[in-house]
Amino acid sequence: MLTNGFNAREWNTLRRLTTPEKIQRFLDADIGYNKEPDGPTCRSPRRVLRDRIAHCMEGALFGAAALRAQGFPPLLLDLEAVRDDDHVLAIFKQRGHWGAIAKSNYSGLRFREPVYRTLRELVMSYFEHYYNLRKEKTLRAYSRPVNLARFDRIEWMTAEQDLWAIPEHLLVIPHTQVLARGTERRLARVDTRLFAAGLVGTVR
Figure: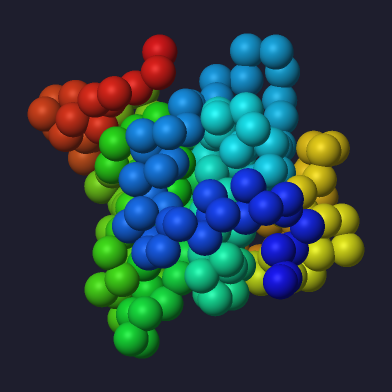
């Protein structure tokens, strides 16, 4: 049986996550948020399973691996921000519509149901929820989908070393801007209730 390099126990865990919703629930309930107290990391899905911790890049890698175990292509999408961290999604398509799986310290930057007809629609569903601690809306651009099969040569799903080649690739590929020229200056600050809602469950 093809297990993509995982041992039987690891592969069985992934195979039990039979829907994108179950993958997201596993990331939310069973995987803690990685604040990188000992320095930057980029764990493989195997290490995420073992360490039970992930930040957004690691969560997206795990989501892509779990989607692959269910027969989806392992796709990532990078969201680019200003005065804020970028955010990475594991994306999938069902019945012609896009959805996403994500790990985030902000409650509004996680799962999206597969109801979006285009990638831009999916990306813009994150716009109002993507903000920094100064209440600025910070999402500015998004990448094309990246199929992680191109990184099979470095065994991205099971590697013990950090996978810096993947975020470095996301940084250099072209991104599509989401705002028209001049729009940024007119953006309102995030209102107090939405700001508080986004921080529910945050790891301080």
